[in-house]
Length: 300
Image (tube, rainbow, N blue to C red):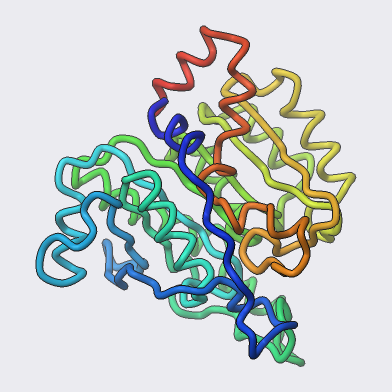
């Protein structure tokens, strides 16, 4: 699986710093300038990052993105957390995936612009925000068609293999996309809103794509019991396409996108190296089984 092999071999994101003026606020904990472009694909807004080898070619970002798609057979989708696609952290992660893998990456606006507003505290909603009502507007019936439209746009351009990674809220849609075999490999960090054991059971019954879950110690959405049950359903070869769960002691929910970089344990979590963490664990899982490894390598 060439994409997974690339994910295994690429370098990690270099050490990045918390902005000095906000030492306790991790909403913008990655430094740098986003290099992608907001475009529309089949009516869906996405943040598009050009493949690494195509950057700087053509006139302007749109030209670079168009060139990045020419002859491309693979692409990466990124599903954001509830705060949407405008957060600089998730844009920089998308840029890094596209650069390291040398494939175009697309951060999908799964909420059609109706992101949860940022609250006064990091990783918190505004006081009084009705998350239950918001969730009613953004369930699978609303979000899956958006993802499907983006994938159709890609396949219409010749893309044949798609990987996806999702953070928090977006992790649920990695599961659902794998269920439908819309994507060929999936990864999620601190997934939320999973129904345990139903979602892992559904995945095992329907999906043909390997899955990596990056989990942590302090997570009210995907805590110790959910991790244990998911491992029991998908682990130890029970999920034939391949399953791996990594665990970061000391890290908290949100570490994959809004890590506290002062905390060493969170520095080393997937925020700092999304490409390597995306599927390197899956490759290690198959190193001792040549037949399964060859099958995995052929997925993308």
